[in-house]
Image 1 (cartoon, one colour):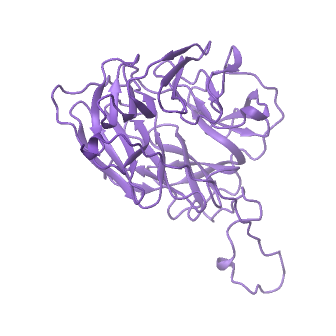
Image 2 (image 1 turned 60 degrees about the vertical axis):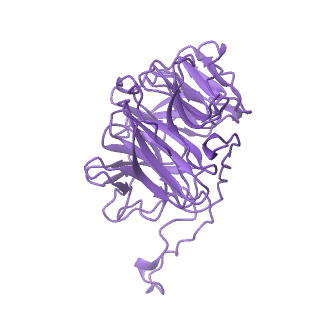
Image 3 (image 1 turned 30 degrees about the horizontal axis):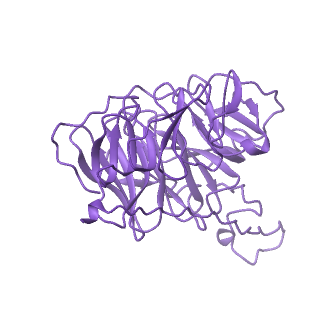
Length: 396
């Protein structure tokens, strides 16, 4: 049997976030310092506060969150950033104004926030969905980190089950369950922005491993790419907002690679590669915007974006106030502004939110010491996904 048709599946283990070792800051003194100022540490003892460089703003746009009553509100016209402080989910405009408390969370609901494509509702910690009708259970468990919205309306959620045997769809309003399985084993699954296809990685009924597309009900399965080596695993999937480009992250445990698969002709091109883990693919609300995270979560991570002008990856924050910090992508406000979270170390826990501009490399500090940030902005209508008949299937 060929390696392509091997039935064995490799599941990449999740990386554990490491705690940050605090640094100290020299006390104020009128004497001549023993250590030159330029050699002093650049972080305080608090792991969520960053000292800014001379050309960065002295204060955050949002220095203090006011006392507010919580009520679900529609998204701001220009988009907004949401985040958790304590037991509340807040939102703020990109200029630091129009602060609102959207909802109060209990302990089981504190977790990753994912807004629907229109921003009309959110899923929190995988198990709870809320909108203007209130909050309710999704039907998925909190430990199912593969829950994703169905495009374009955001009226349902999909995720593989823990055994990978079934791909499940849950209605957002009622949690009604249906199966949309089209693979023997489903590792990851996402909805195409146009809503006409599901995209998944795993093992097909023909015992081929790779990336496959099917209709929204799981019908009409087609092969998009095959995995060439037995030890290669798909670890992340994302589609460009325009709908014609699929980004696939693979690893063979020695190296991680991002490849771009372009429809309808299934042409394959390289985007980035690294020996350190690559993940958190973050497409924007408009076409030609993509960010991703590189690095181990027990160290400092970097965020890179694909520069559409040069076609090359660019590191977010090089030479600015984010330089040397552990940076992760949050989401795009538009074609040039990317929201990121910074910490002295690692991938989890409270951090500082910044708005980085891809046009000039500037970074503006939005607010400090927040958790579970997300961008709430509507996505543009995408081109329907199609595959040219009888096209050659590429190998990852």
